[in-house]
Image 1: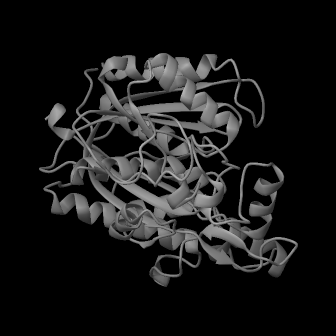
Image 2: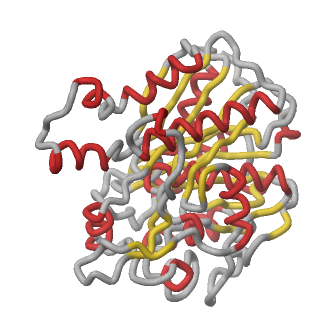
Length: 388
């Protein structure tokens, strides 16, 4: 089956910056983190810095913050795509990336309700329910499913969507990644793992590829894309992607980097580009020592230190299952507006690390995402004119 042109033709977002892709873009460009200090977290009672999704959305879209955010992001992406000349084909599929779905509702179900609620509300806890409700709302009849690959879930969802398009299983795909899981318990355990830092403002603690980084800031998001070969004004073209698994450790990256490198090489091969074509690396960049060292090694060794690198995690936070999707949205809108919304440098760092919002020259972007447990992923983006 011949490879299909795959463009991102619509974007919707709900993040710590607010409800909508414009608040996300404006927030990233400001160079100021979305995080605020929230009480009720941590044993000391000092609170935690979190890029938590603020209140909002339509309560008719669901009882939970997660359901409302998912429906909002999907609806915004679909409206955006239609405004850009897209009309849905006969076979529209839906991919939803999740890691810990409806965690607040499950907490409510077990702790406050002692496992008792009516059947309709119980069904809302199932990860298939929001997917089915969206398909019903828009009258879509293509395949619909959830994917989960920890922090690499966003890349995994995009790769799945492109496979569907290339195999002629669908005409269009709506892809959504949702993670609104910042309960006190979840935050506490990521802090205990030694990877999340919530006791300081993000730019003071999360410094990807810079001296003094202590780990990642945490966040929440639901981000949606419409992928199609049709439409008048795409944000970016998805050229291809790949995934591998370290099969090494439940949390740690294999220091040999064998399968991380293989994933990147395979993604470039599938996309039909060479290392010399890559202009930017939109990194996983959580600010942890092992992940930053792996991605810096990719830049220096596989790409001979040529591309420029950045990570938006200090600004939007590490949004877990939605992390890659937030970062892909930043890259896609970067092509649209000609600006890379990189955070400001605050310490000595890698010589190719971008410092603040930077004019974007036309070129290929490699988006890497390394999920906990050895989930390696990479996708390749290009200006839409490349494949038009």
